[in-house]
Length: 314
Ligand code: TMO
Image (cartoon, rainbow, N blue to C red; front, side, top):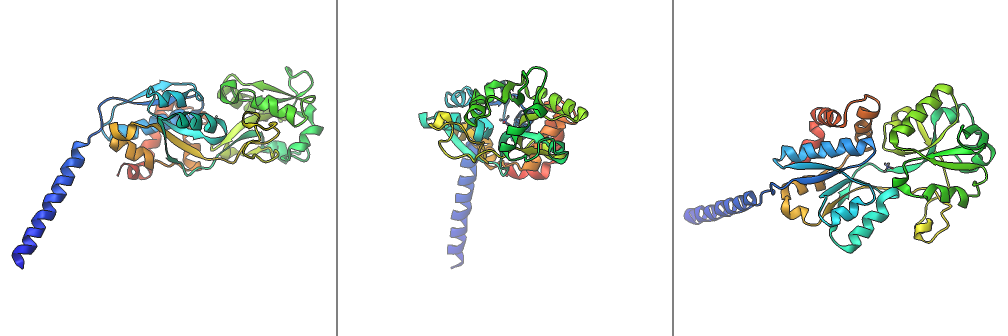
């Protein structure tokens, strides 16, 4: 009896050893994991945060500036390995299109829910600059409140860079019957939106801008306008007339389909990574409020949040 137990024990120990050693053999490739950087702060900081997590596992990483729509095709072709901020409203279509062609996988969803929408700073509501907001129909009666030097007497919608949504907002303005009263202007970059928000606040003037959550503006108060609800198919690209708002959406992660095989440890960590609204907002604030570089922001975030990210690596 004793010897049988001993034999069983030896077999089990042998199996554990064999399993352990085979797991150790499946090491991550030394080829760099290519992480894209885009043109808004949380995305760039999170690129360095995730790169730092991969480096803590012994992986090599490389950062590549990329167009935020074209990136999904680049991931499919293997030129870029991952995308860590797939925002449903803006990138869902490009993500699923690349996925349906084969070569892109869904690597899971962050805890943070998202909204990418036009809105106004909190004081516009508090000071009642446009009575009836945040209901969109209130806009019909206050174009003058949102007029600027370059808007020809119409109210201005300050949209993000055109690379994000193409003509989605000009189409929406017209579809809602607001075309005679409002004009869409594209910001050159996210920084131009923050600069305009800051100067409008200083002057106590009305302003409508594209913005999103999670973002650093969550902490100071930003109110999203309530448009007719988003439905599948309401946008022109999906067969609708475009007279709808943005979806209350998800924030996903994407990867090239080979990533789990070439870098099993990094992929395992990547699939577990899930950031909250607060954490994504912090990453943006370190740059847009505290004015750190993206790299320094990531270093600081990693140093202060080991309890958050270390469990992703185990
Ligand atoms: C993709 N974005 C967060 C800028 O809306």
